Length: 400
Image (cartoon, rainbow, N blue to C red; front, side, top):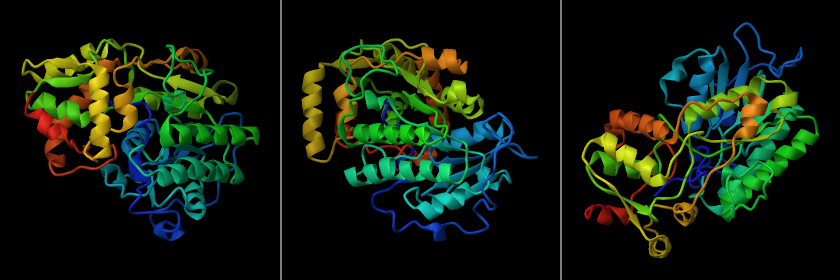
């Protein structure tokens, strides 16, 4: 089993049960936690103005998996950052004077405008994941995206990088997928991601520079979610089941390589960056080989075991109807199929050079999880910040 490209940003930025557009207003961000001052006016030819402390970037979904990794990446390169997220920013970086925190909802225009005061650029990572309700997916991924990008343009911010997903391609009939291939998102999430890209194009037409990045499933430190299934079973010395025989090629992406692409989209001239780019690992083998590397690293001599895809999919469809499937439809319907994109455009236009292979990314994440596993012993949910509930697989695990 595998995660899917569409689980891209932080579900914790839009929880269905805890916040709606009318419950997260500018009142949620106080003067001592929010960025203050007026929206910056840009000078010179580059996309970022910056000041004595370097460029200042707003990251929506800053408390999520991608958000915190991007903040760390940018801090190491002399940026300062503003995090806008529904949930608490609980990382050690909260004590760094270069990090400002606004806790609020991207669906509230006043909160978004407050968070954008004084910033030079925006990276829009926040999204509601497929496990959320259709309403929350739409209001966050479509309405929220419109609010973020429109507000950036109205405040005179020159550039806003939009993090999309290769989920916009749907279930393709060929590989590799290129940026100009047909868009055919499946389900509320895939469809919402396409609509969000249309909004990005609209805002680009109105003068906002909006680089759009379509990443494959990305993993690394702080990444839990569905990958916890693989890591838990590996560390407990169990074989691991796959939907299908595992001979398909399924491209992943290390979060550090994604951060590199975002950084390039923030800093390069518009004639190179103001476009749409696929990003994924340059080196990847079959799913069986890549996942076997994780079991080998765990050191228990266990193996990947493939199952015929059709019966496995039918079983998971039934479990999903009963509410006990650990996977959503898009994962189990595509897990046994090829899934990879061409990254030539990002390499040529941006000079992007991914460093990590699929196996590098998986093992990087495994070692981080092994060190922090005890911290999540009693945690579960539907975001990337916590392990996903294993549902009916808890019973199946005993057989492996």
